[in-house]
Image (cartoon, rainbow, N blue to C red; front, side, top):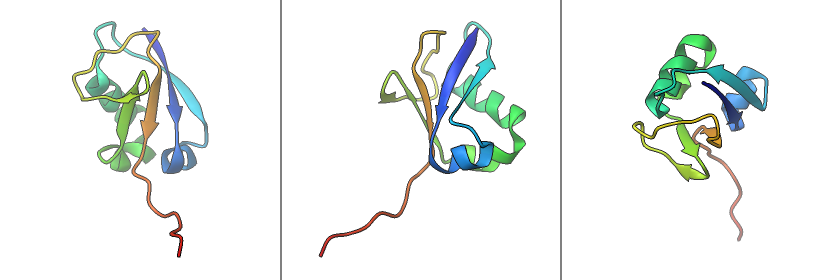
Length: 85
């Protein structure tokens, strides 16, 4: 199956794109997606372990099944921001 993944923050900077499409097995899960991305994008491999995936607008555990209709996002840890006095 072919899935589309939206990319955010530092992962977007590493990959140089806002989204990507990947071919995955029909029985793919978030874990399968993480493994496939580590193989396809070596520059991202190191940071993938600290990234979270959201599926259909909710953070998803590794065993979450995926489908071609899944709304998938790769979300790296975010730091920074400002505090108000």
